Image 1 (tube, rainbow, N blue to C red):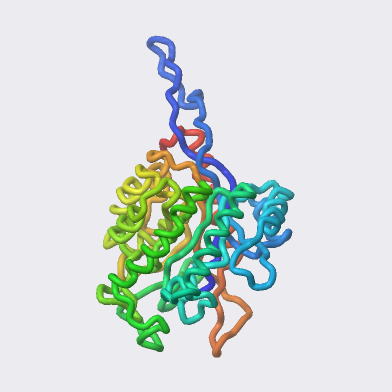
Image 2 (image 1 turned 120 degrees about the vertical axis):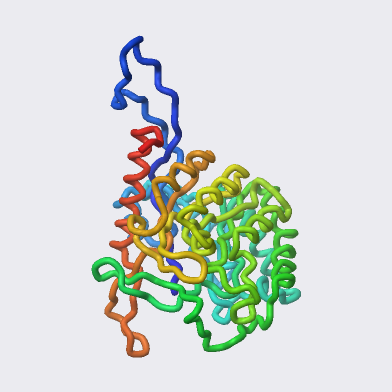
Length: 380
């Protein structure tokens, strides 16, 4: 599945103390001073084009993650390429808050064009890590404060899409139905110990560069969590909350944290509707949340489906309040949205794609929550 992601510009929640009302008189909520926005509506969808950036601006997006147009198949963007990307954003009134790099994408390892880092392949791994380091240096030169990435071998796993609201299709995972065509990937067996070894090798070399350049690196959790003992021979060590806690404490740094996908983390919890808020607090109070994918879902670990943001199991108003509570001030963005029928047919079956209007709905929902929080000081 094409992991397309969208971000928009808006604001967030910070409560302030109202001035005291005259003695004996209750202060009307209408006179409560509004809190300044801190969180921003964001998006990370593609393509990188004037038309797509205009789409962001049309729906109030002001803060984005985007990918540079890189020539010659290079593994990193140059300063000039990043400057051109930033200039394009500025022409549409957008702030380029995060970069999508050329390496460590959310792709199944059997389809990954640059697999050396995740496969642990000797000299090529070191060359690719240096290319990622150069990405950070060039981002710093242009003033891009954060780079996102994935450390995944299996990409995004789903078993089916199911009927959702109206004509929408909800992408789903049912572990009992998961039957991969190939039992192993080209990575072979990658148990937890080996996976942690590869993660640590990368962080040992990249976190010092993040510290030097002051560019934050934001890693996405593995989507979804898979059975203990592995799936296609891979132990998804970043598919549990405990794994993510261990991850952010390797080479601990204020520039090393998470692209905090609320949807993915909920998918990895037994009871996400009650557990997600304390997870936000754990990472948020430690300032390890660098970006938020604000996605809802139904179900829990082992069996779930994605939904529109307003009809899943998670109280999204409470979630937004919790981000405000921990002082988060970055982007809040849609991640996956439900699909809709598309004219394409592949292998005799209709393709369900994530359509722009579904993202526009998610933008409006998030923007409304943020504006409501602004006027109520974070209270309902």
